[in-house]
Length: 271
Image (cartoon, rainbow, N blue to C red; front, side, top):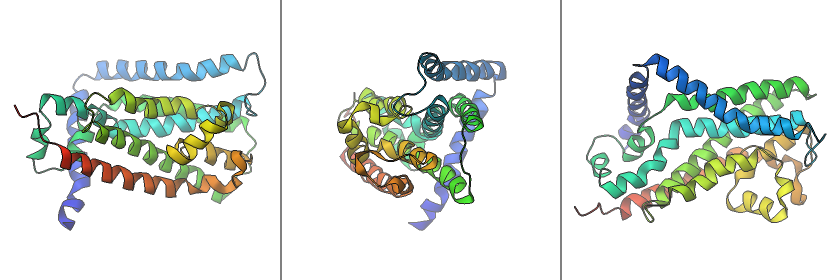
């Protein structure tokens, strides 16, 4: 039992490197696709900048503070999408019966599904978001301490894990409802769009839902509030953003249970 777990990371990276070598076979094409990916994703931030040409604050956030929200949301989703986003295509594999091949190979089906079609061009989203983050911190007056720096790094890692867990939960649901990939996308890509804005502007019911049901608020909103010294909504303590790593652990546990349950339910296509 222990040996397969220890082998899993190396197996995953071997699968990823196979796809990376494939994409690098045409370097010019890769560069163009990476550039187009960055241009497409940065348009969301351009819309925010245009919005601030008419207003000075939105939901109590300045342009620089909104830039930080946008950057942390895009970085976390971008990294999660890079390493686990391919798993959302499991429904197609189930429908065509090609998922069976994953079950007979000496590599866990989860690793094969997550690495399937690994697209290095997806790194464009977190890269352009990193540029926006540099812009945000250049305009913000943050009282930096070692603890705040560590908290920022840990919260980004936790947010990435939360988004990754949501990708896996959506994939696991496709064992029950094969054509539900778009539903899962509403919580991943739709969740990224939601979390790049101050959640308080969406109303208390939405804030409760993304805090206690689908914990998207812990991806970046609560950690950013803590970093900027802003009060948390719903009367929650200001330090609630520090719970992001704990939320990430819970989400991983739920995703693991859901994936295992989906595998047990899988009965192939019968063809």
